[in-house]
Length: 369
Image 1 (cartoon, rainbow, N blue to C red):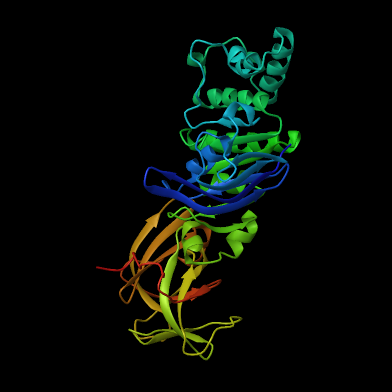
Image 2 (cartoon, one colour; image 1 turned 180 degrees about the vertical axis):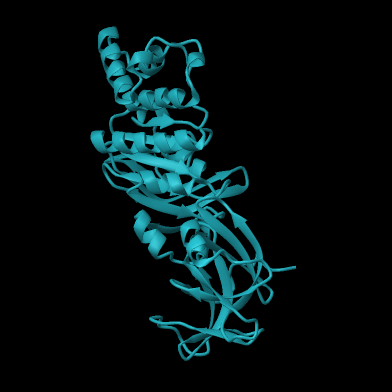
């Protein structure tokens, strides 16, 4: 196993800096997911760790070994860093059998044919592909090819594996299956895993900890999936975690008020400053609806759209000039009565979070035209 210590690194292409002053520690034997939107620098960070990209500042350690240092002009070749890599496109050799693909890195290390075959078969068995050892990639499904790539990474390194969006191209069922397989292999072998992805659901399945990156290449929050989900550090992380509502409010004596419409609702168990502006954040599943008259007090909104999605209903409501998204369990909706378009409903927020208004507030994108 191996730890990773990234110390204040920067990486750039020509005159453009992609990563600046990034520091991150990956513990020995843990599974860390680096999660962020497309083009945020996730893959650049992976390539810097592997040695495919040179850093312009800082240092990278794999275990106790310094593998990259801009100041000391150290850049250990990728093949000497003892890192197994699984790419998004699998990169399996089409003319080689499963066994030959997996054994290839061992051949490059000049292991004997007997030892290379033994280790390759063991890795193939670990990913449940033993019966396909003599098949060519063209005879395999996408999920099976992904398992081959994972087995090849396992023989490349028993210490550290980096996976760069490896299951993005699979269908939902296969993604779920492969997420579980990767999690199980990591737990059984104790290998350190860095998982690069924009898929939050997969990251939360696989990871012991997650690093959330923004579109400028900075790490916004680092913590366990539970910590990040229950306590998003700012509006960016809250929004990144899924569909969300943001409403600008003013706090006044245990109530929050939408200033422009002069409507308010009571809140409890929140320590907020008086007369201060906040952005109130709420997830669609955390909003309850109760039939109301448009003249009632509180956050009363008009139902504009009702969509049945099988396991849940998806609602869009008009609250002043803001469009509010609400999700409701289908069983509960049928029990209480499915809301109707055109009618008015009072919104009750079960677990709102409040973020102080500032220069970098999230732009309100869901406004009624």
